Amino acid sequence: MAEHLKGIGEEPLEGIGGWLWLVALGIVASPLRIIFLIFPLYSEIFKDGSWEILTSSGTEAYHPMWAPIILAEMTINAALVLTWIFVGFLFFLKKAIFPKFYICILLFTLVFIIIDAMAVKIIFPNDPIFDPDTTKELVRTLVACLIWIPYILISKRVQATFVKKL
Image (cartoon, rainbow, N blue to C red):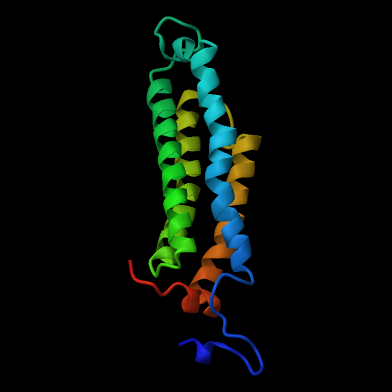
């Protein structure tokens, strides 16, 4: 099937190999990263009383947007964990739909970072829209998009590997 996708004296460019190993690493690491870095932050907000301080009118830190922003972040990050796990299944089962899902989750993550930063800007209008941590995440995600989206779209290995129907 992939005979036309190999060079002279080379193995066919199908299967998880080459640069796809880095894609696999990112797919496995992404949900774990969210679980171990982001979820403890939410847990702490509820344990240390920050939720009450941020969401109760009359407190100094109160803003009516805190509750919707925090709840939206929690929901979206939980959905991202589940989506990354689903993308992982598509990847390792070599499903034809994988490239589209992978590109979508990368782009969604990029857009989510920007929208989340804009939402927090409503609460802190005098602060820069991108603090150092947000800038780091934005750049990391943008670089991932700039590297992996073109690779997924033009790679002969990707075209030859992800062929199984759902």
